[in-house]
Length: 104
Image 1 (cartoon, rainbow, N blue to C red):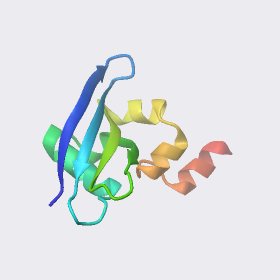
Image 2 (tube, rainbow, N blue to C red):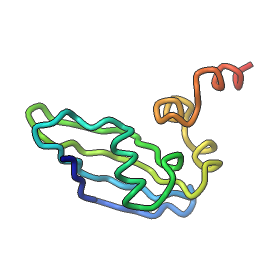
Image 3 (tube, rainbow, N blue to C red):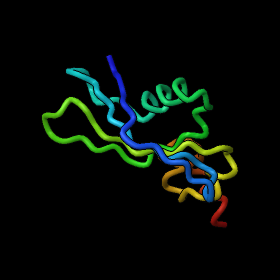
């Protein structure tokens, strides 16, 4: 069973997002994927998964928990404006074909 606890939460009004640092506890199971973490946060905060950017997750060897830093945007346009392309690709908000078309 995967659980999480919020360690720090800040409202970033200038960038139109909420920034969260949380501990994800997963016991003896596998390390949770970005999609699983996104689903948990989406249910807890009542927002669409499209608005959640998981910046990074850090896990120490032998520890059955990880620390994640994520951002919840107010709207998808803000996420597309402020996040770099690699983060949008990693979080599924952009596909590889879209990135190549933008550069042309």
